[in-house]
Length: 371
Ligand code: OSB
Ligand code: MG
Image 1 (tube, rainbow, N blue to C red):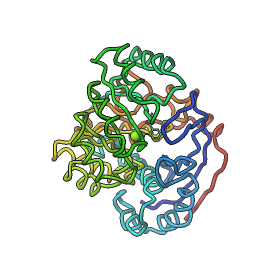
Image 2: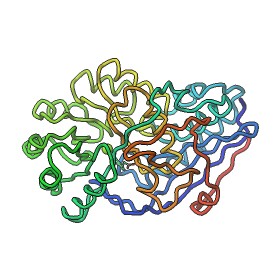
Image 3: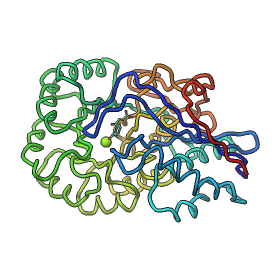
């Protein structure tokens, strides 16, 4: 196929509830939707970078820059783009900037699947027809408000409860959740790299709470110190920020830095690399789950498709649209079909249409590039 046009829309979508992590508080999602058009079909991808480089080094502006200046001109120049993997030579030449690559690659995967008339899940080799869903709860102003939120999510049927922690809001809130809701709730904590090896004794206090895992306790670019920490903890460590590729995954698994991996399509540079990490982990007996970046329905649809692969055995941060937005930009919105479970769509591509009226409401800027 020949890509005739690529559009970059910048959207501002206000979150229903502010989302606080150890690295800051988000009130509005400011992000880029990539649309790629060929012979009357359009594929959609979403950038998961945040406005500022507080989660990783990318930002909305760096994604725009890399797409506009480097990636899009080369993609529009390609004579042959028969499969998303044909983007590889362009991507290989640019170091890093994985969220920018993933946003474009996602649009091409969707377009490729729509042309073939297959679902993205099928094209990726997904076998599950429905996925179990967890929820990620941000840092709340008080333990009381956190307990209310956790209770609400348990009532809605979420299959995994993840709670953000930071120094000063860690052991006590996690203990309070166990006290109120019991030891059987599937519960985990995510630190977003807020601790160091100085905190080993503190982190050990989480061990009696029987958490499913602790996510990214140490530095965003570390794997070595995580080995030291894992030797001291009975709670499994799950890496998020530190894993950008299947090579990173291999190194982290080989040295014992992680027992579980959170796969985020954007963080690893796209669906192709996400699938490689999935396959490697499956061979190694390492379970994976799909993380989230507060995506709109477009990114959510990509996450659902990758989660349909068989080694996604732990519920992901793939909550329905109404957990984040008053109105999402897909039609239909992402919804539970029974509590805690989302059906993997069978229609071509991502399997969700665009709600044009909602989309236009959120757009603040558009750039269009033609062949
Ligand atoms: O570390 O997984 C994370 C949100 C923003 C930045 C980082 C993370 C998160 C989440 C939210 O945990 C997951 C979601 O509901 O999309
Ligand atoms: Mg995380």
